[in-house]
Every structure is written in structure tokens, then in C-alpha cells.
Amino acid sequence: MDYPLKWCQNVFNFLLRCLSSPWFLWASLITVFWLFSAGKVSSLERQLADSQAAESSTTEENRALRSEHEQFRLRLQNASREARQLRAELDELRRVHDREDAEFRNKESLLNQKLENLRRAKTQTEQKLSFTEGLLRDTQALLATRTAELQDCQPYLSSTDKLSHSDILSHLKHLNSAIFQTAGQIADAIKFEASDDELQDGMESAVERAKSVVGEGTVTLLRRMRHDEDPLAVQMALQADAVARVAEIINQWDPTGDEKLNERISHVFARILQNETQTIAGRWRALARNYIEDANARAQIQTRYQETLHDDFAAIINTARAQASHERIEHILEGFQEQIVSIVDQAMITRRAIGQQVISSEFRLIAPVGGERFGTLTMHNAYAGKRHDEKKDEEAGIPVLCCVQLGLESSAPADEGQWKVMEKGEVALQTLFEELLHEFGRDCSQRLPDILKLVTACSPRLLYRTRSFWQYTTRSMMARNVR
Image (spheres, one colour):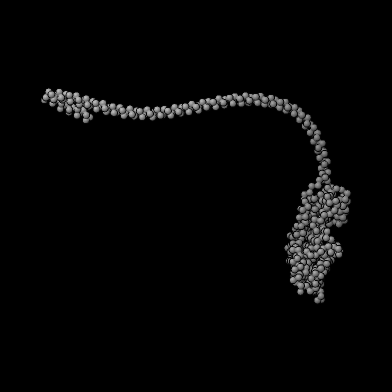
């Protein structure tokens, strides 16, 4: 906008000068022409500069476009190369597909052939099966007949045991433990008089009953010893009574207690055991005991022996001169009825285990009675210390006073008729008091340190028994000497 105005002004001034002077006019015209040419040149220069700037910008754009074109060209080359690779892979996959398709068609043809063969084989097999089923029906009918015959003989052919020897021994030990604990608890629950061996009136029947079960020697022991401080002798007598009764439960055949019938069955079984195999003899024993001992018979045994043990314990306690009255003793024993029932129940369990649940072996209780000769093979002196030589007792033929724990021996076909001791019976000998007096001397009260050393050397299981018997034997002998 400024340039045309200036130009117009220059033209106007030039015109004025031309009007005033011819030379100026010509000079003005030349000047105007020059100015016009200069303006034109300036405009052209500016246009040239703009064109150069535009050309420079275009050059830059061309350069960028050329670079982008080069990048696109490289990408196109890569894409073309990848396309060629993919085309090659596709061709390879087509070839693999054609090859596998041909293999599949071949396999399909083979499978169709095999299927046809299997159909023909199935038809043949069905024909054979129909024939075999006919034979099977005939065979099954014959098998049913033979099975029925075999079942009749099976009980005498099978020797499968329901329990092992260790199980039988465990039952017996549990029974001995129950007897020991119950006898000790009852003896500790009763208070006894500190008097001589004279009996009160009306106690003769109790003494006779105690003699019939535990023997005269044990009854003499109960009457001559004092039990007011430690009733160990009473506990021993109670154990001996319980052991004798449970031995009856386990050994008898007839639950009703018919001695003649028990003797006849025992004789028959001895003959079977001698002439037949162990499998037949054991099965016969199990069947006989099973059919003889029904549910009613078991209930009768339990009731009868619970009452018998109760009355035996009362007789032993009265024989030992209990301070309590007969009614009081009965009341105390009623408190131990559960333990007595447990003893009878455990005896029944042991009876069934020995008599019915083991076929391959025979078992025999070791329960020596009073007066029987002591033998180390089947017996153990329950009141002897570690230093005591039981062989001397056996050689001397010392008799047994009573049995306080059951033992067990077994016989199997492999033993060739010999009995194998599994557990020795625990017994007390009739020389118990004489042995203690000989060991300690008459003046036992003055040798207490030596006595304690000897007691300490005893078996831990017999420590309490040995100490208690020493105390009461000493008192009894001293009382006799005083009288």
C-alpha cells in the first residue's frame, strides 16, 4: 500500500518540474522511468526471493517425500519378501496336506477292510459263544452241585484263624490284669481286725467255702496272719479264687456246669485230637463250642459266675476277720460289681478266643492248684526275688500254695504234639514264710537295712509283694513266740 502512494507522489512532483523546465521535464521523465524501473526491479527481486524461498521449501518437501518414498520402497520390498516366503510355506502346506490326505484315504481303506473282517469274526464268535453258553450252563449246574458238596466239607478243610497267638496271649494278660486290680481294690477297701486266728461264731461256712476254692493252705494263711495294716494276703487269696473260677469258665465245655457231660466231651475231643488232623480237630472244637454255647447259655454263665465270685470274695473276707458286718461286706462288694462283671466278661472273651477263633492250634491254661508240685517249665514263683533259685524249689518238690495268675501253653502241628509255654503261671509256694524267715533271721526288726537292700534287689514287679509279706510274716511269728 505505501509503495503506490509514494510512486504517485513522485510522479506528481515530476510533472510539476516538467511543466516548469524542459530539461527538468526530460530529467524527470528519465527519473520517473528509472524509478519505475527500480520499483519494478525491486518487486521482481522480492518475487525472486519469494520464489527462492518457495523453491527451498519445495526442495525440503521433496527431500522429505523422497525419504518417505524410500522408506515405503523398503517396506514394500520386505512385504514382497514376506509374501514370497508365505507363498512358499503355503505351497509346502498344500503338499503336506495332499500327502496326508492320501495317507488318510489309504488308512481309511485299510480300516474298512479290517472292520469287515471284524464283522465276519463277530459273527463267528457269536456262533461260538452260543455253543459255549450251552456248555457253561451245563458246567454251572455241575459246579452248583459240587459247591454244595464242598460247603459241607469246607468247615473241616479250612484252618483260617481269626486271631493270632499274640492276640490270645493279650486277652489272657488283660484278664490277669483285671483280676489283680480288682483283688487289690477290694482288699484295700476292707478293714480287718488285729486279733488271733480264732473265728467268730457263724464263720465256719465261710471258711469251708474258701477252702473249697483256694485250698486249706491259703485259708490257714488268712487265719494266722494279721491284715489290719496291709491286706496283701487277702489280695492273694482273692486272686487265687478269681483265677480258679475263670479257669472253670474257659475250660468247661458245657455252660451249665454238668461235670459228667464236660468229662465225656473232653474224652471225645481227646480221641479226635489224637486220631485226626489239627484242622479237623480244631474245626470240631470250634463248632462244638459254638453250638453248645448259645446266647442263653452265655447269659447263664455270666450270671452264675458273677454271683459265685461275689459269694467267694465275701467268704474270703470273712475268713480273714474283717471288722465290718456281713451286710457291710455285701454293700462294699456291691460297689465292685462292675469290676466283677468285667472279669467274667473278659473270661468269656478269652473262652471264645481259645475255643472258637483259632483252628490251627490248641491252647491249654496253666492254673496249678494247691498241693501240686512246683515246676519251672510252666510255673514262676511270684514272690521270689531275682537271687532266688527256682531250680532248687523244683528239685526239692515244694508244693504250690495257690495260683495268682493264669499261664498259657499252645500246641500246633509243627510242634509234633509238644506243648509250648507262651506264659508261665504265677504261683505262691507253701514255703513262702519259711523262706523269708530263713533269709532274714528271727530278729528281723534289727536287720532292717539288710532287708531293704534285699527287697531293692527284687524284681520291681514283686517289690511290693515281698515287702508286705515280710512285714506280716515277721509279726505273725513274733506273736506266736510271745504266746
